[in-house]
Length: 337
Image 1: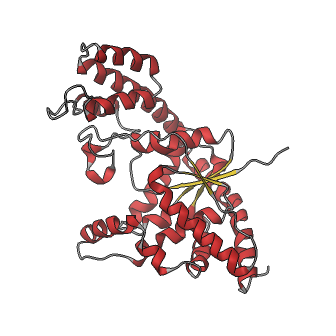
Image 2: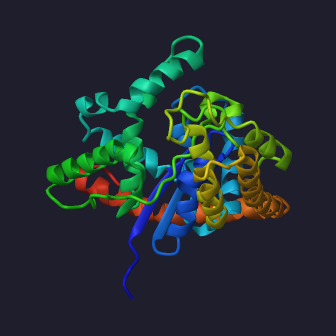
């Protein structure tokens, strides 16, 4: 039997999962499980690069695990990054194969460092924030991933990973690391219903994202108050707000409704309240199914946590083997038991 190609992706435990996260990444992850050998990691080490609360980090990590399981991610494909300490060990080794110049060119550092300085209250910017792309490379390379599902805006990080892997291979004189390829899945970029010029994001505040696990009344209220026309859209063009509502319908898989309402829009007869009601119904349908599944999981919380710890331990075996081989190649000592 032909061995499945391996896919690696990670997600930070930064609070509520919103529909931008779900439609932009998690929905694809669920589907990729059918075709690939998948490893999905909740990257709590990465969450430390910005100002954070330790207790909240632990709570958010487990909440995200339960959310991912509720959406259809399989437990055996899930691990928590800090339960696999080899990520950090490989990161240090790879730091020594990464040039300072490459890291200075990473565009996200400029954006996040400004936010970090503001959030910390004292202008503090951690060295971890500067070097986190190397940890991201370690996350990918430690599992010898063939593919990483990304959007076009994430190509820079994957290219850095490939650069680090190639330099490592050249210096140790062996084609050890696979150079991971991007897996460009269809990514629907959901916008904020409060400001459709900006992407749906938790960092902008509660009105800018719709929680996948939110209460029905809250979801309906947010969709009902969604911005449609602002009066500055050129004649004959669909406004960003209306376009975003149609995008949400498409992402939710309601193509018959999408087609019907689009025909009404093109005929100039669409009532925005009908479009908003259709979007709200679609999101509530998804949310209700996920909330019910999460309630079932929460009823067996201890068992589920043990299952994830066991899955992390099993996935860790792959990471341990990689680090053992990397240490042999780089002249480091290995612990023998």
